[in-house]
Length: 213
Image (cartoon, rainbow, N blue to C red):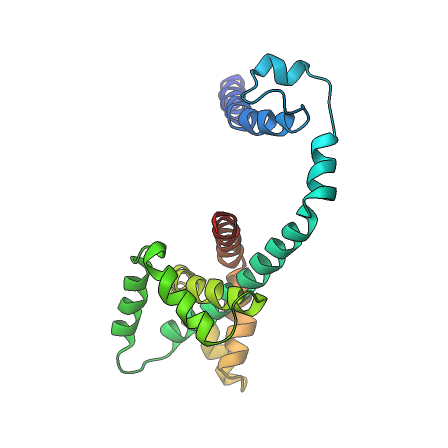
């Protein structure tokens, strides 16, 4: 009993130490926002001993229209995440559930597109969006980010969908259900962990791309 207690205690101490190590840079970053611009590269003692100043937040929110930029990024990333994950789930279901000519070749083409650097696709993407008349619109950004995210979502979710027991599908078919019922009643509920993980990856990736552009 004592040995088990001490082993758990050691594990928890290491976990707490790891949390402190990883969260300290984040706390340092947040604290730097409360000091004035006199410190270009503040030292830790300057950050933690400075008097909190909210002037930086006032400048950002009121003078630089940051709130509008934040809402734009949130709207684009949110819609792109939902769209790419949902369409990726539908595509993954089609690859797992149906048999059609060229299925494996098409999936390999999907994988090949994941190897293309995003920088090489900037000019073709802009050309397509311009020809569609979607420059400087939400729809243009949604089309880009959803189209780019579907491939990764399909690859990730296909592997998870293949673990779903076929007997569950057969029970739905015996009760008169179709493919949409199987997808909605079986695959989506059983795949909540995978869908949640893919949504986090998709949202963070889209948000980072928006920030870089």
